[in-house]
Amino acid sequence: MKRTGALVTLSLPFIPSITSTNSQPAAQLATPFSLLLRVAAIESNKSTEQVSFKTIAKGARSGVHEPSQIVIRSQSEWQKLWRQHTSPSTAPAPLPAVDFDKEMVAAVFLGEKPTGGYDIEIVSVERSDDTLTVSFKEREPQPGGITTQAFTQPFHIVSISIEGTTSVRFRRTP
Image 1 (tube, rainbow, N blue to C red):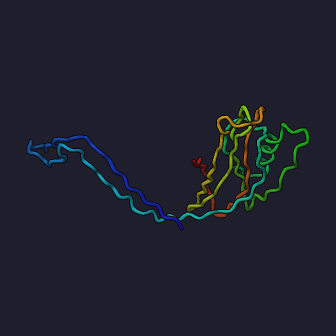
Image 2 (cartoon, rainbow, N blue to C red):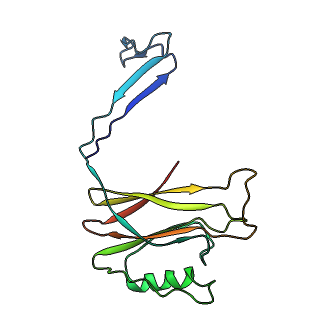
């Protein structure tokens, strides 16, 4: 179980005073110095749990040329995405089996890049209440590094259990 908390500090400029409706000073709200307002966020009672996922496909060549994060919940959507994804291949891989009664597909596509050396990877999936958060990391080639001189389309496609999930969000991690 993971609990989160936050501390917010807000600096406000000098505020001399506020007067009430009867022209009497209502309160001295600030001093000539910055007013620091500290608000401690109440610790969240929402728990998060790590969810396992299984890689279906990962690589650098895809028929998906635009950056995107996609959730697939049906066989027909899955067939359509797989057909687009494998379209550059002269001998496309067969459609991987997914039991959409028990799982969904999450896919991240980096889009078309001018060289090799780019990568995208789903690094974790967490469930908080009925929401899954799919975290992914993008990598670029090292400056001056040796790369393939060809267009690439990095991607990562995974299957995830749908148990208790109504929504999915994607989060890019550093």
